[in-house]
Image 1 (cartoon, rainbow, N blue to C red):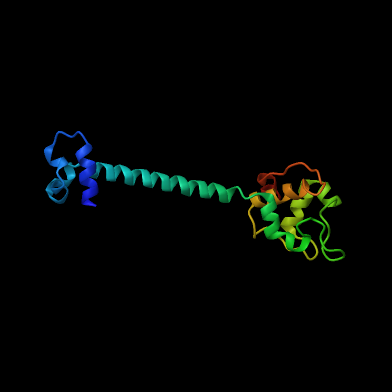
Image 2 (image 1 turned 180 degrees about the horizontal axis):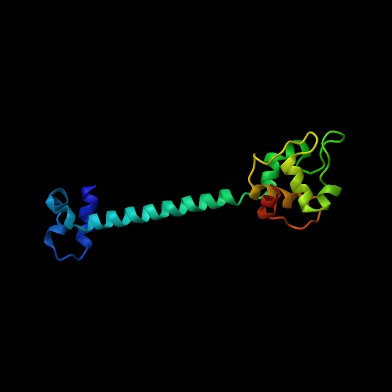
Length: 155
C-alpha cells in the first residue's frame, strides 16, 4: 500500500517536499499529503454513486407495470391470457364489464364481486390504476385510462 502511494506521490508536482516522501504518509504530515485529499474525493464520489444507485432502484420499483401487477395479483384466477377458467373465474378478454366504464372495474377491485375479494387495503390506488389500465387495454380490449386519483374518489 505504501509503495503504491510512494509511486503515485512522486509523480505529483507538489512543492512541499514531505508530501513526496513515503515516510510522510506514516508520520504526522499525512494531513498535508495529496493522498488524503484523493481518498476524501474518492469517498465523496463513492457516496454519490451509491445514492444514484439507490435512487435508480427506487424508480425501478415504482415503475412496475400493470402486466407485472396483474400477474402477481390476478393471474392466478383470471390466467395470464385473461381468459379465466370456464364456469369458475370469468374471462376478462372481451368482457362487457371491462369494456364498460373504468369506474365499474375500479369498483369491482375496491368492493369485490362474488368469489373475488376486495383489493382496497391490499394494493395502492396507483397499482390498482395500473392493473385496470392493463386489463382494459389487453387481449383485444380497448378502454380509456383511469388514474389513481379517480380510484381515490371512489373510496
